[in-house]
Length: 286
Image (cartoon, rainbow, N blue to C red; front, side):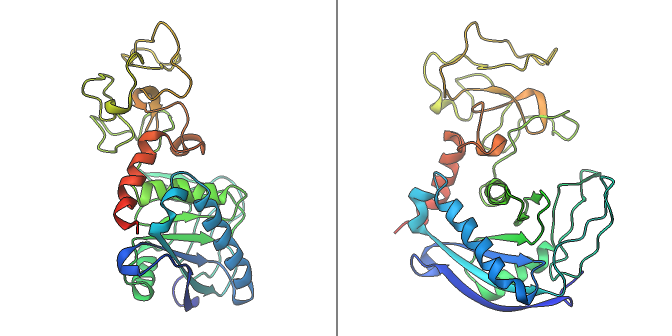
């Protein structure tokens, strides 16, 4: 349940592309792994790195990235689960106090898996002083993850994709591109680079990527009434960047750059999101 329930052992640089002072340094930590499970943790960390490298645009920018794995052991395996979705209550003694059913905007969300971010950042800073971002892999097969000051994921079958999605939030400032009931969607123009309320091609924040002739709005959600979205007369060309209704937890009145993206459905990053990632990592390339 806290740092008294385990300990930090060592740090290993598992991807070394140059001096830490010149590269973008990613730190991987684990929670809910007992000492006898460290081999499993090492495998989970490697699989995440392999997935990251094979995911565009990270592969083309990988020479600018170092990855450090910190071995952290917990007294017990897994994570806390308060059972907010009706399942059994589970309590585990883990170093970073990983827990499902974490709160978000006043709601408990079963899949929202969080850890003690302050402690995680402290451990990362102590062992990798030049770190730029932290991913925590939690030894639970239940689906879950979170973004924020660090990215967190479980070891569910989709865990590596979850972690990269959350990295999009935490390290690159990208917003969720899926819809919802809009209750948690902030008013006004969002500051995030990949969601907007602006469907004017002349002023839209990613307008430079919109091809001439692509309608704006590009696609409306047929279930929305009164959102102001006027459906185009013909569908856009496949893969066209534009404004597609439904993003930032609202189905209506807010738009994403493409129908599919890693920040929406784990499809490849759209050109807008990929551009943000490239711009961030370019300064660290050899």
